[in-house]
Image (cartoon, rainbow, N blue to C red; front, side, top):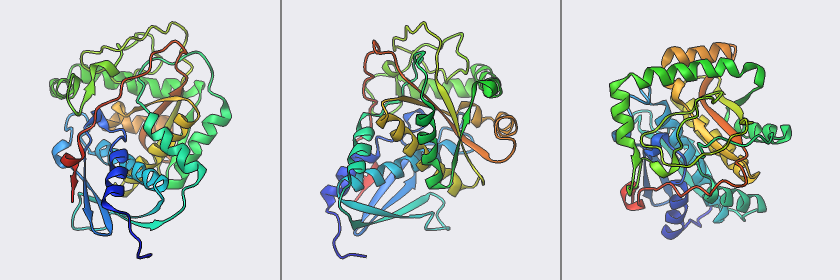
Length: 322
């Protein structure tokens, strides 16, 4: 390794970008430690959403997305990130150790960093404009760099994804523990975590595949045209902690690629928190060939749609140990 190392200011600037990653209910379930030459990523079990994410899949996916965001941030700041995943088998919360080497930023690094700053989880209905097939392929291809696959779900198979999504929504509507957790983590105003009311629309009764319903939705969504969104299922050959962490990196790369192309995105995991519904998606959509980790919805928002407000993030002093 080169003796040159990033300064503390550089690392903090990169981490400030990394924590913009999406996370389940914007719970931001990560902790970072700056230790001389390295940055370590830890899961924060205190932010585990037990009813929403019983297997902690979403927690690890969220941390994986933040890890990829850190790679992107360091690249634009002139550093290559070398990641060791799960470096300490005795500590299950220690997800990655990252070391750095100097590297000249490339034009693609600046484009990804710009996408990182502009990306939002857009849960509104998308427009009737079709997403070009080359765009879908380009976004899907990002997953393979991280040992995952993004399976496109065409119109003819959408019902196989819609059934478990509707069933998950039905079960969760009748689950008091889930509803209490949802109320605690959404509809918030003026907090630094959770899903704000201003970022969540009312669910559409005629949505082909329903997305998660949040508390006190306050986002206007008046699209009357059919929604031409495309759906991708991010999946992995194995289903261990490393696979989930890498799937999170793949999801981040896909979301940033879509944002770079001008598309809006929304991550959906609700039915995957129910074991039998996840098994249904694995059998009916993936033909039992891979394990589903998340669904990504992509599309164009109408030109008349207002920009989404920034989703809040916790200050670095709450998530970074120096």
